[in-house]
Image 1 (cartoon, rainbow over the protein chains, first blue to last red):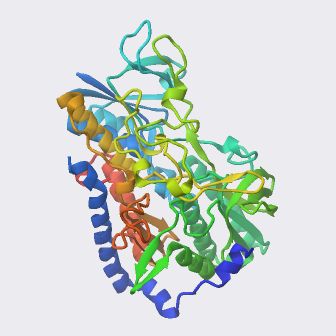
Image 2: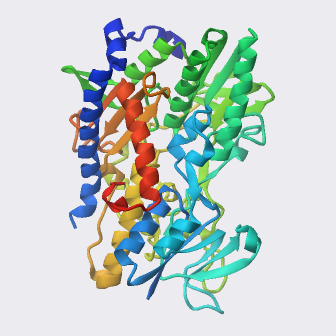
Image 3: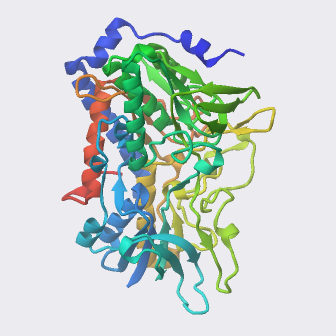
Length: 53
Length: 485
């Protein structure tokens, strides 16, 4: 059986561009807004069952 | 006036208390019973555990909030529920023992018309010999535990700075633990701190978990859509482990901890030892030590509670094979079937089964992550119980109660991977529903549009925003009820 470390060793590494994007202030600000909007949609769905009665 | 008694003042209980005062405060007297004097935003204990926050930043005293809102507060531990009253008191009541230093040890009977059990978990360190603050490992389950974890971590960093190599093991301390997400967060925050301290290369970090695969998080993993392709939380998490050079031990049940060594067994039956210099292992949870008695004084705890100690609600508790689990098994109203004026919310309700596939080693050891039901779902359930009580007070039993099943409820989760306004990062995830519904979503069990994950600095900002927003809400500041659970 393959160990977890052997599986991890085959996992894809992020490229330099991806690592840069994860720290880029302008891009991350846009992502901050975008993710918040996604979460608001999720929260509305989460509360939906309570509100329909 | 009806009497609504809420046991516990965590996320579920405190949310229930504030909404109860807002929604039914004129028709009911609201009472909260909690052994703790302070409220704790537990998700930020991770940052206390690495020394980035002080305990005062994640806790605040409950009594002034309840005094301001007109909620009666007893700082005490609920010991027994008498849902039929007894020979002396005809009303149902809860017997409590005060933990308030001014009334320490005093016993009181608190009558109720409606009871909301939001007692949360008992941190069952005793399930594993040598686990926990009284043994050989630290924890971040409470702010006090996290302070001790931060102190030990500072000592480890000091040793690393003198050039002594150290092994740090972070994860869960039993095969049936939950909250793997918190262990994941602490692992990456510790890694981040070691990196910031310039000692990362001398430290070896292990993530020891009962999850069968990385990225399971006790919810059976997630499938995300990314740039036109499906990817899994497994691949995504493995990539992060490779990037940060963290070792993993999967499908593990910790059987014993001794000074500097963890004994564990894996799903394939292999038994191994792992030495450590620092270990943060979360405990398994069980229900708090609460008993129930009928009018005659006979112990009816088995009627109210599952063997795990959590309270039975409107779930389907029939023993079924994993393949037969259905979304409908999960509770919708959180009412106790025997005493419907009792609700159990948050961690206090007994789930019908796990979400992740349970496994057993050839030696018969159960290795099965328990279902997470903290945070957002806890808050929703707390509010739901109060909405139901409001309906029952107004319209009686004939009313149609609101529902909120975890199989029809989404969750947003932000797992910190390091703090800092410029250097921080976190994995932001949403999933819908929490409990997969393969009849509704045959491909992955969840909505592909509403299940996503992303790593980046923005995640840290979101986690920080949630920290301040939920503490603001819990302090019942102006407009608090507009902030969703």
